[in-house]
Length: 418
Ligand code: UD1
Image 1 (cartoon, protein in one colour):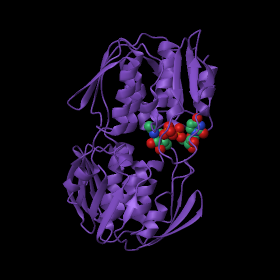
Image 2 (spheres, rainbow, N blue to C red):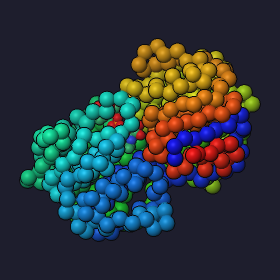
Image 3 (cartoon, rainbow, N blue to C red):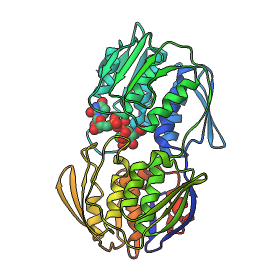
Image 4 (cartoon, rainbow, N blue to C red):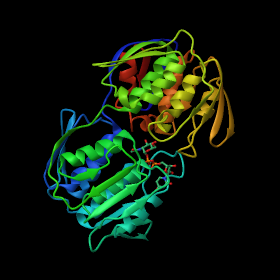
């Protein structure tokens, strides 16, 4: 898919099924190498990050195959500890395999991980915690080489930054380590909880699931299991905000509403009505979007950084001024420039804060996506702009949305890809 074309000005109506969560599926797929049995992971999204993870698992010696929307992984023979360069470039979640491989093979060799260019994205928390658990790292020809000659052991880990990836990486290392690992300051995102529930189903021993203090008793033999990935709360949140921006009334089938409190609170303060039902989440946009004074991104359960750009786009159609503050990543206002070109009134105060003044009428333009969630935000901008918007750089959007055009078309949008 090269470009997405959107003809704006159509309100959204109808229903769409929310696919499985990227951020839940990736660490769970990495976790399948911790058992020698077969695992079946259902409801996996067909997105490029998942395809890359499967390539990595394949290269390490796993047999992987799709069965409907599930993936069967046979990890009986994980002979390799060296990750191939080409599959890793641009995928931050290759990091999960670091803890898992050190646990299973006592060795890992990998490139510095990529990921969206939304900030510095260091990996110091991952490396320091793994060192505490007995791993030693050196850099060879630009690659990270890690070894745990004696095997990993438990450790007491204290973090004052909430990191989803580091929490998941250390959980994966800790379930294979000898003894207890305690993570103080663990991230509480629902995807961390799903990884823990998957490992519990495999026979792991984890206490404090869902809290910021996890206690993992390692060294238990893990068995294969069947686990179903939950629906993607960020994709569902994107469509809630798209409905707000474009107007209309939608049913988001299987949306995990209980994990979407902060985005639903925002929708409600902007005048939307919603109802949680057995088949999903109904959202009705107001006639006129009410403004909110400020929006701050913070770790779960507060407003997710992954929905900040889409919320910013919706805010261009709301009354008044809104201060948006990004506290998680340093470089996450990359949609500001293209939105301004489309006619938005956005003032950047500093790297972490912008003021959006609305309502403004956006005009269709040719714009370029440079990262995943910002790309989705530009598609949403296309829904509300007059005329045609062409979004290029769609490979970023494919990393996290199975088919954003198909989904929005099901909701009545005039959108297609070429
Ligand atoms: C994960 C999500 C991503 C989401 C982000 C924050 C996946 C695959 N990706 O990314 O969609 O936007 O959480 O909710 O689940 N940090 C350090 N040192 C480290 C690691 C992180 O300082 O070693 C900092 C980061 O720079 C950032 C903050 O911690 O400021 C949070 O990052 P983190 O939660 O680790 O993000 P990811 O796991 O990469």
